[in-house]
Length: 182
Length: 192
Image 1 (cartoon, one colour):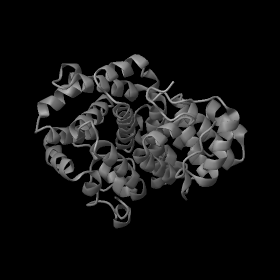
Image 2 (cartoon, rainbow over the protein chains, first blue to last red):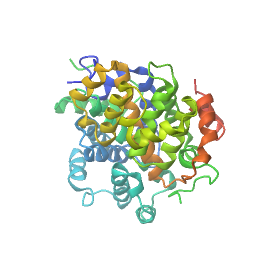
Image 3 (cartoon, one colour):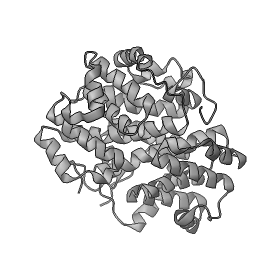
Image 4 (spheres, helix red, strand yellow):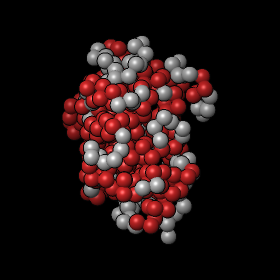
């Protein structure tokens, strides 16, 4: 039950975006730049970082939608499940493992990121921009997760809905509103 | 010592924003809307919420600069800003702002900690849906800005005097305008 009078039928963050379009615009743009626009990290890798942080923050809507987007980009839902279970043993690159470790620390507190964490990522091939974007994706999802949870938005457990959402996000990114679910 | 090469003349979030202007643009637009656009909560009240959350997250740069901006909006009242950081329930602020700061404090930890009772307490003191929404989003957004500033290991000066003049300038000009001095031209082209 939302804490404020949010428009009915809009799941998760889309309800907040409908309620307050002026803040939705930069929030969408940030996600679009971070997760969808060209980058040396693939969109699938970046969506895995977003869903990893959302999982650590225990935000159902954000985890479900971003893991669906990741699965779409990667063409492999089972990989997404393996990363959720234990990214250190999942079949992903050493670089992505090092970046996910950094993201996990940022999720708790940015001050926990050490020079050793960064060096491990660099040794695995991470660039300055990839390090920057990993930190900002993790930080941004600490915002999106708290927004979705803090307003008490409707976060359905509807596998089909998230799959459809994930497909749309993978194809078009974040600048357009998601249609309301009836 | 920053984890990536950042301009040493640009402390805190500024160095990070100069490194990546494409993300700086929406980051500046969001804070501009949240903390400065017309709102039934005054700019000073909203900066106090941002300062409080940043103080709870122990992010020196953020609680210092936003504390300075808050003080600038509140007639230079640095004592009030200090009191809000330390114990807002004892501060000379409205009961409504106290109720909203309680909500912000919960969002800072985890959005799921906000209860209907917290919301009702804020409503009883006159908070509107928009004010509650913005309180939640300011708190959530500052959990982002704080982690960004800390997570990159940016330089965060400890001396309050460093922030005072900049706080006055940001209070006068806003975040987008103040950022134009250090962002590449293409990123400020679309601002407003």
